Length: 465
Ligand code: PFF
Image (cartoon, rainbow, N blue to C red):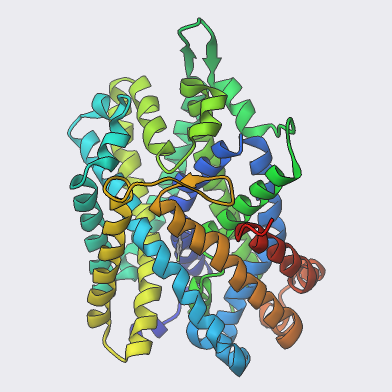
């Protein structure tokens, strides 16, 4: 690692913001509402919050404590805990490497929408079929993806992440306010169908927030658990080495316990509000049944333009701000993804940051072009064990989030719970005499609950049952 990356965050707020910069991104704004809609709303939200409170805090705490205690990135940190476990650190490298390819594709979609709104093309964007036509075209998605990837790569190449993190202090709170504003506006929507039925935003919010147990089967519940769990990993950037690396920059006098709570609250708030901005609107414009059947990668890109159109001229202005801020939130995440991959490659190949940034960007570009082609030349439909019918993007997402992340989590829990022992983490959290409020819960989760639940979910993800 280069000297500058060894420097630590300036303080607790600096760390929380940087970690939140990695955590808050397309996972919250694009992925969470999509999954909430797919599972019909309320119950998914409930399960998600329960998982964040139970598992999220334990896993985030573990990652950050491993990083700070060893002072190393994931690749080496696992080896420092136990020599024979170094390979798990290498395994964590695979997750951001896969995510990077499709994250840049969606980043490109965001840029495309931004340019459409800047040129006041909102009506066209809101028209039926726009998103499908765009993603299935061969050139435009690739061009926008390459622009997005280039911006990410330049930041990593120049090593100026700290610069954009400072900027995120302003953008993140603004984004949160804007999302909350659009969410509130969504509640005022109403739509009259051809048969004269009136669907309102308030009905939509009820679907989004109130759990519905009708027709729930054990199989469906497992699918919800699986998606909620992989969403939690994804959204908090845990089980992929990133928070270990961030933890290694955290100063020894910072209260990790408090920071973890703050990161979780911020990340979950952005996700739930993003869902509130999108899911009720989907119910209004498309109805609850189509919402469940057609939820997919394009949900936000199909629904939000309709909300903006509904706002009239102001909608175009709101959309410009929205897409630029989302682009920024996505950028802070994709920079953290690429940074992790580049840092590991620098160690593996003993080359400079600049050389590795170019190499990683080139490989990412190839992967991302393939993902783009998944919507045209390489289009196919495959049914995944979690009930999604997907394309290449969904497969990449599934492998990294539903298979590899649970596997890393099981291994981490075994290592910390049974080999190094939970005290190894607890001592680090309490190193300055801080109070570890949920210590008992932490031990039970790391030793027993997480490994068992995660093994069941991994088997489910692999289609074993
Ligand atoms: N947590 C980020 C989000 O929710 O958008 C996504 C992410 C960041 C995924 C970093 C992977 C990663 F390595």
